[in-house]
Length: 371
Ligand SMILES: *Cc1c(COP(=O)(O)O)cnc(C)c1O
Image (tube, rainbow, N blue to C red; front, top):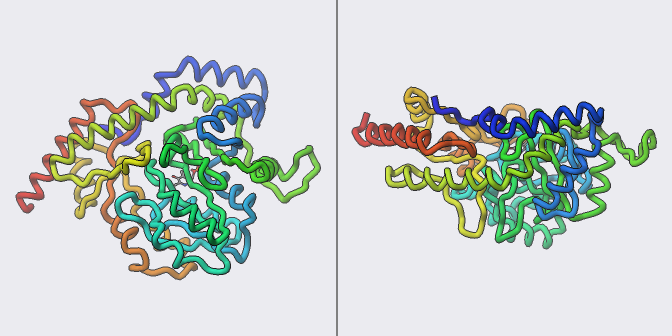
């Protein structure tokens, strides 16, 4: 079976360095925050072309704190996309603000800027574009709309470490950027992790306080904060991995280029990477009108796949209270029905990709034969 992701292959490739970093951190007893987290934050700020990076305990916490630090709260509305992982929307909900959805551009799967202004009301406070699958959202028009209406922009870059929009790294374009280091993400911890990036010293200061109980000085709680601190061991692991992230990203991009070359001639609808963006292929999503049958076919032919995501957030039961209905966001609903994520990870081999391509060829032949 070709795995969908292979976390073991990557661990084995850097095992000695990782094991030493973990053991050194245990010996230091800096279990929460500490010097390894600070060292990682410095590397990650530079990597994202940001002034500040603050390590937290998940991408969801990063989004929650970025929203709070930007002043989002009860009575506010936050515009985002329904074609995302639920965490984007849950983080808005945690603040007491109301999530407001805008449909996606079907080519990039990211929020369609042409539809944003119609969703703005006097209560709108922020926009969260999601750089889904590793391709940046169309940030120039989003930033222009935000400036015009005095809104903050928080980038959900949980799937887009190192992605670029017109030469600029994601996480540095909006008022804040939010990253996840969940193990399967492009930069993965060996546990939970996340970060907020920003060029705004006030946002950085507030996030730094909020992640650690709202205190700058121990037991002096100026804000109502949270226990959202990054663990020392995760900081140490991520610090080691920073030396490899560019290499791994280039391996993903090379694997994606090979898929493109193998699959497009078969008539498969492959992902479109726009020329002004650096797509980092967290997910390599193809589209097929018979997606569910294709997934079963690939499984039966030794290929593991994923679906990101089968139900758009506006149709999730958890958010039924928002009052959205089937048909509200046709492009997001169609994407949810058609997308299929092929195996994608830096260590994916040409031979493995050949197996995937052969299986897809078999599928296309079966479809053409009308069975
Ligand atoms: C993974 C992810 C998150 C949440 O990150 P966690 O670290 O799992 O909390 C948020 N948004 C998107 C788009 C994600 O893919």
